[in-house]
Amino acid sequence: MRTFSRRIFAALPVAAVVTVLFGCGGGGTSAPEGLVPGQSSPSIVVSPSTSQIKAGGNISLTADPTGGGASAFLEVQWSVPSGAGTLQVLPQDLSAGMRSTAVYYAPATPGQYVITASLKNYPNVTAVATVVVGGN
Image 1 (cartoon, one colour):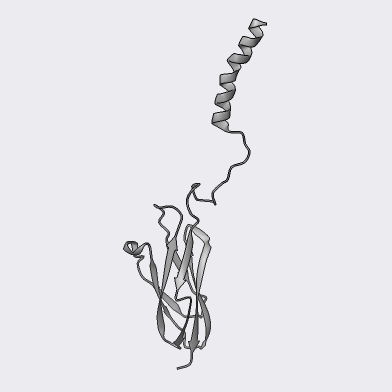
Image 2 (cartoon, helix red, strand yellow):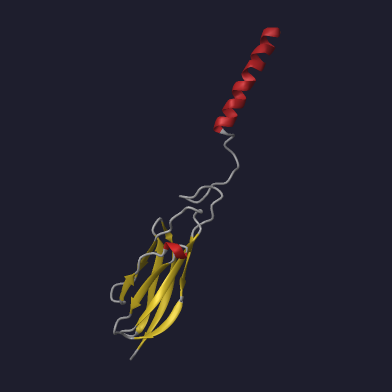
């Protein structure tokens, strides 16, 4: 009987090491793709979110990204549909909390246009600004 109990006790430290190294495989939570557990999910806010300008006019829009971890660089990408005017994207202002500014130049055609800001590393994280372009 002594030999049998020595083998059991000898195997216990190995089992403990395996459990520590590989875990039990159950429970726990995982962070969204690209995030380390404990980091906040990235988000973005565009302002103004709605506005009215004259045909051919322009308006300055800002996008403020947050989250993704304290050291994350959240690069903002802007887009406007074809025929809905143009954007001039200014260099991202790292001193202002990674704020991004774009100037929207409205087309000559009145209508409602949607400008989208998204995060380069998180393309599903978006915010929009709706601009109503009126006649002159």
